[in-house]
Structures are given as structure tokens and as C-alpha cells.
Amino acid sequence: MRVKPIPLQVIQLAITHCQFTTMPLANTIAHMLIFVFFFLLHPGEYAYTNNPNAAPFHLCDVHLNLHNRRLNPLICSEQDLHAATYVGLEFTTQKNGVRGETVGLGWSGHPTLCPVLALIQHLLHLHAHRAPLTTPLYAYHNIGTWHIITTTTLTQHLRWAASTLAQTTGISPHNISIRSLCSSGAMALLCADVDSDKIHLLDRWHSNEMMRYLHVQVFPTPAPLAPLMVHHGYFTLIPNNPLG
Image (tube, rainbow, N blue to C red):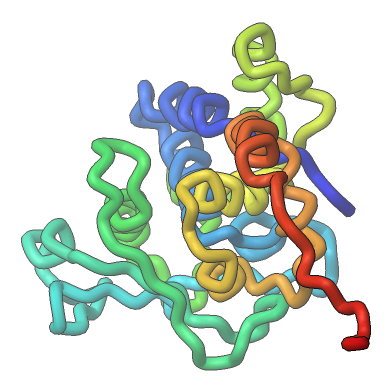
């Protein structure tokens, strides 16, 4: 099923709204939204769903590095944790993933929209409450009990942000869901002229269908095509008439 990519300003509003509070629920929602956008994750990998085939990432699937040194997120010092330069997720049974393969990212340079920063903050929360290695990343601890984030909850927050910015983005909240976030991250890479092969490596799509769909969805991508076609539409065909 094709979904419309969500502009980053909508995603950022949903994240910022959650970061105004110290509530574990809100903070975990922000962390999961960041993970999905940067890692191009599929539903069930970052939030609870009733899909029996869902394969969430767990605490034991997290890889952290401080330059070339591997860190153990459960026992390393907070100083090393805050200094981490790379975060990776190891695939086990996730959709379209290669078992044992790790996909990782570095710092984004943004004060809030950063996969490394979000994971460090979430790890600090899980570590503070002695979460076991089998804890899904979408879990959080509050008032003595473990809770989980659902795909429905994330969709509600995204639709609130989309509704707030509908006049400027043209995105209807009814046309998006949490499934839109994977294509949102891919569209951001596409608009940055990142090679499509590199996007495929991160998103794990097995065909070019989604890439073809994304190419024509957002204004910055097709807009320059008309002048290019005018300037480069003049050509001469090599004659293929037989010699005589």
C-alpha cells in the first residue's frame, strides 16, 4: 500500500510537542518518531501492533560506538554514552532484513532531530529502570510499571501535527499514518540527491516501485524538470538507414 510522505516540519512539530514535557510516554513517542524517520523502519519494528508477524527491535539489538570502540550500552559510563558517535540496529527477524546485519547512523548535527541523541536518551531511561536485554525499544517505564508505545498512538500524534500545519503543507491528517514515516525519510534523502542505491540499502525495499512513486510526490523533485526538458529537448537522432 502506497502512503504519502510527511514533510519534516510535521514530524518535527510532533516531536517537539512531546519534548516539552518530562513524561516518559511523551519522550518515548519522540524517540520512536526519530528512529523511524532516520532508519526508515517498518511498523512493528518500532511500535506495538497486533500483527502476529511483527518483529520489534530489542535492547539487545542496539549497537553503540565511540569512534572505533564498541560500547556496551548497559554498563558503559554515562560520559561514554553521551560521547557515542554511532548507533546501529542489528537485524534478527525484521522484514526484508539480513539476519546479523547492522545498519547504523552517526550524529545529524541537529539539536533534537538526531538518531544518536534520541537513542542515547532512550537508553538512559531503560538503563535507569534496569530493563532486560529482551526489552523492546518501544517500551518505557512509568510509576513502577512497564508500558509500550503502539502504532495507533504514534499515528494520532502525527495526525495532530499534520492538522496543525495543514494550511502550509497541504497534507490532510486523514491521508497519513505512522506507515508514512518510512517514505518520509526516503523522500528526504531523495530530495538531497542521495543515490537511490544507497536509499535502498537503508530502507530494504526489494523493488524500485516505491522510489518511482516518491519521485513525483513532492514539489522540489519534479518542479525543475520542465526547464530541463526545454533546454535539453533538442537532439539529433543517429541515422539508421542502410548504406546505399
